[in-house]
Length: 188
Image (tube, rainbow, N blue to C red; front, side, top):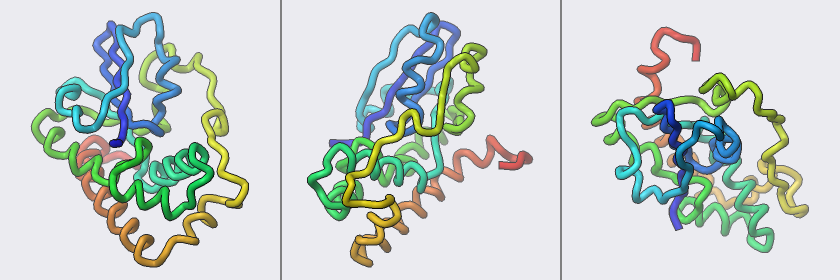
């Protein structure tokens, strides 16, 4: 299984793509009256869905990874964190993919679509301010055997931690190459 993305298309031309764990459930309530379509798709079909007018929603890589790990652990409490993280490293999670931005970079270079940070999502359209949100609204609970995600991740073997650090660092590099021009001269 590969990471899933959600696409929302609106009558005003707004065309949003967001990976799971990047506001996709919140987007389901965004400007519903003016929405033409909402659907999910696999990362292997990204090129079919993205164009120069796309707005791609992102969140910081480590934050996305942690959120995806918590969600995967909560969906599969019978598994240990090593099983979940190994699956993520191998690209088998729908909530985090270690090569998303590396795969996205050539498309961005070719098409020049825009990026929008998850925490700024509520500023996309005038109706957004009416949507209610709280920091715990979409939070998944860890299995009781883990006190925190940090505690869970501390049980990983050293080689997995090193591999994760490399993957996250590499993804941060690709994302920065794409978003830095959008924020040039701004405090981001």
